[in-house]
Length: 317
Image (cartoon, rainbow, N blue to C red; front, side):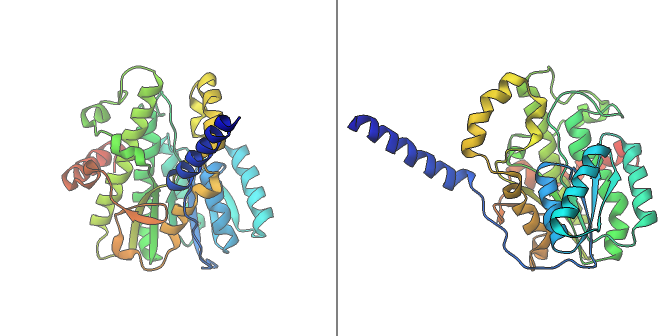
């Protein structure tokens, strides 16, 4: 019995060490108010995006839920209005997998909304397939759709400055690769349909997020717009819905024990969007509500510039 107790105690200690040193994230604590400010949060009908939108609404911001699924987004808007007591939470249709939809969203937004103070590029997907324009799904949604959206909204952001662009990347960017020939040919970034293929394509798109933020900061230097990217932590969200059922079942115990809830995943996003005094770090990468170093490829200015040029061509800017 004593041996079993020792083993149980050791397992518990190991769990606590892992949880608090690796998985549990910092909390963003600030009383800043956002009355009179407008924020867009993509993919905000669920998960980290919804938690982010709720926090912004509680601070008094007008929040635009930029989402693909109308029913889910309107339900989320209702939930956020009810919990926050803020009626300035509205849904606008946006499918980041369609460049036409991105342009339509921007036209609607600019025609109806006088301000834009915070743009949060939160939406993300993992899975095989292609966008409406024929691009790899992860690259097209996670990077190219947000690239076009941000560029089309830059003038309004500059007009309402100081303003911010926050892009949710991932620590997975360290495993990412920039496959420029495949990007331009509208083929899968990784061959095959395996789980690894999906994860590799996801990591590739997250590297694009980091490089995009770096180049955007270079191009916005001297303006009133600052931009940041971040790793939200290890979060239990619907991002895994594209993997097989048996893989999801295997993940459930791990998720329950280690992964944070979406509210925890929103903390570094909120830090990047709201924290005062971080403007000098525009273009940089944050994790756990603190400035962090990105992987070597994420610091490559030539690669960032090349990605920008390729993205401009693909998005027909």
